[in-house]
Image (cartoon, rainbow, N blue to C red; front, side, top):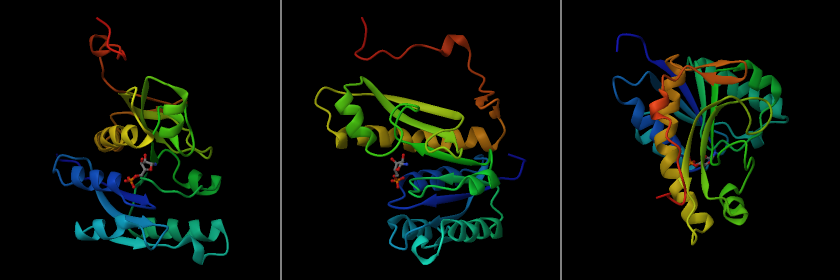
Length: 220
Ligand code: GRF
């Protein structure tokens, strides 16, 4: 690839398995992004040492050390800009962001959520999906807006919900899809192959022949 890789900052709060999927994908010379830094809002986030072990600069900015959300976000923003970050990928970052911070990264900040948005915004998505009896669950990569778990959708993956699923078994199936879809969606977005237009993401060159329905249970 001739064009320069875009610099991406990844925000985490915990184990960082999605972060690791982004780091792994970005190693490919043809991937249009490099992971410039990983920032956690918790010093004990397990993902920090995993990123460091991959040679990615990883720092904690403990939100508890700041007197206000704005002060925490100002430091976060400074760190991202110091690292030359052009796009932000939230990957299990468990802090609500102010509209001011979100606007500063408008159309340059992505998030992954473990449901087929706009269904099941918020926490405990898999338990709620199992309880609701939905037949398809999944995950969504979207552009971040000030409203929680909302914003233009870049990509979604649907997985079946089985009769004997627990929140844990469903969560594992969704997580495997997350690890595939987040690097793919990041690649589409930072390369400009898809873009935000009128609060929808468009540009993916998919033909109607590829637009097969997904049935669950399978139909004969
Ligand atoms: C993922 O399920 C993600 O969709 C959600 O938080 C979880 C983070 O997991 N936002 P990990 O830290 O990436 O393993």
